[in-house]
Image (cartoon, rainbow, N blue to C red):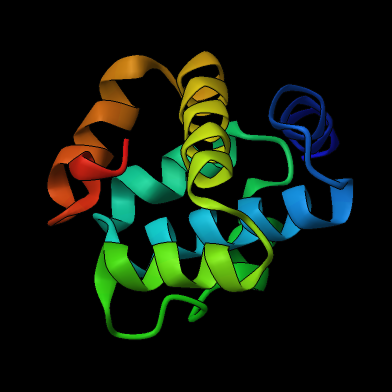
Amino acid sequence: MDELVSRIASHVGVDESVARRAVEIILGFLKDAGPEDDVATLLDEMPGGREAAEAGSGAAGFMGAMGAFNALTKAGLGMGEVQGVVKEVVGFAKEKAGAERVDAVIAAIPGLSQFV
């Protein structure tokens, strides 16, 4: 996960601790809301993905994609930074697990496509 956290810190311009928490929130949300098999495979393909998802699981509460967005802003990200972080996480996931799998996970979660 260090590679992704460093990439986010560099490209989005946030502190690494904020970037790490954002990754945890996003992966935890995918774990909680996404199709179990596809998300499990996705997390396995991302180094440290399972651990980060466990750390972020439940952070979005019961409010779906909007809950994840709220958790990200509470973690210290502004609107533009949220978009930048999501872009980096999705790009990294596609590099590691393939675009088809990532797109399937995104499509399966109601409301997520509006944030990606």
